[in-house]
Image 1 (cartoon, helix red, strand yellow):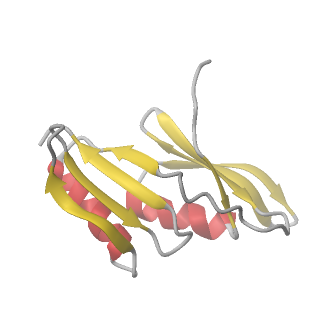
Image 2 (image 1 turned 30 degrees about the horizontal axis):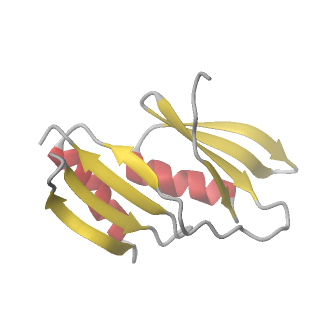
Length: 124
């Protein structure tokens, strides 16, 4: 195996990719567009990527036991992402805090697609 990446099913791929890029940074890559509608796209963050797919008219499956973890390099970067996610009604699951496992840690569920983002920074 060479990699594993989250495959995120969303109602609107184009809006979602813009939303997450504005919060996390990174580079986008459109993989599939049909009649002006973006069907698949990737957001490249460092050496990883988030893959976004449309629902193709179906329902978005509930995945309450799935979270996406973000490993951030600096305290300021974690704070910036945290604030960007809560700025538009994101729900704080875990406030920013120091942990027993040596990380600065927080969790936020975004308002766009209700994805839970787990944030860790070990270089505090």
